[in-house]
Image (cartoon, rainbow, N blue to C red):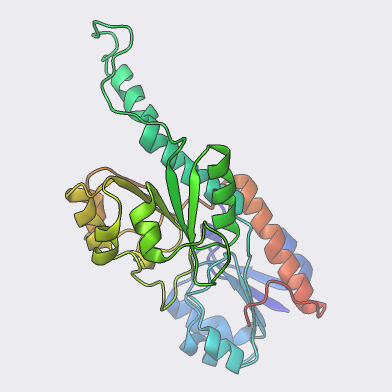
Length: 314
C-alpha cells in the first residue's frame, strides 16, 4: 500500500514519538503539515491516508481514485466527508477512547484550579505578597470546596463516564444529559442540567444537533456563578454568548481547550474575556496518550488490511 500521513506535526513534537510502526504496512510518505494544494495534487497516488485535522472533503475523495482507507489520529471525524467516503466504498476508522484519561484529567485540572486558586496564590507569593502580609495566612482570594457540588456532564461517552467516576471520588453529585434516553435519576433534560449544575462540562460530538448547543439562551438558564468547561469541539459553543456570560458574571469562570476556528484567530473574542482559562487543544496531548494513539492507529490499519476492521465509522 501507498500510505500518506498528512499532518504528522499535530501528533509529535520534535520527534518525541515515532510513526515508524506504520511502515510495516506499506510505503509511507510523511508530511509535517500538508497544504491543500499539495494534497489535491498527490492524493490520486495513494491507497490510504491517515490524518488528524486535514480536511478530506468531497473534492479530495473524488480525486483519490485509488483510496481505500482513511485513518484518523483522532476520535472526532468532522473533517472527513463521511457520506462521500461511504458512497465510494472507502473505510474510515477513528481512534476511539485513546484520550479518555487525559481529557478527564484536564477537566479536573480546570476544576481544581478554579476553586482552589493555586496558581493565583502562587503568583501572589512570588510577587512578594506573603512577605508583606501581617498575618500567617493571607486570605486574599476566595476559594471553595468542590465536595458536595453538582457537575453537569453533556454527553455520556467514554470521556463523560471517566469524568463522572472522578467526580464521584471527589464527592460531587452528577447530572447527565445525553440524546439517548436512559433510566436513572442522574439522567436529566438539558434545561434541568443547566439550572441544577455548579459545573457544566461538554463531552458531546459536534453535529447538527450539538452545534452551538451552548448559546445565549443556554447560558441564561445556567445557575448563577456556574463554572463552564469545554474540551469537546469548539463548535458546540457560541463564543460571543460565552464571552457575554463571563462579562456579566453570569458564569464565575470558564475553561476551554477548543475553539470554533483553530488555531485561534486574531479576532477571537474570548481572548479578552474575564475569568477564562484557554489551552490550545492540548487536553489529549500527554506523551503517554499520544503513544497509545499511534498504537491504535496502527492496529486499525492492520485490521483493515487483514479484513478485521475495528473502530469503523463507515
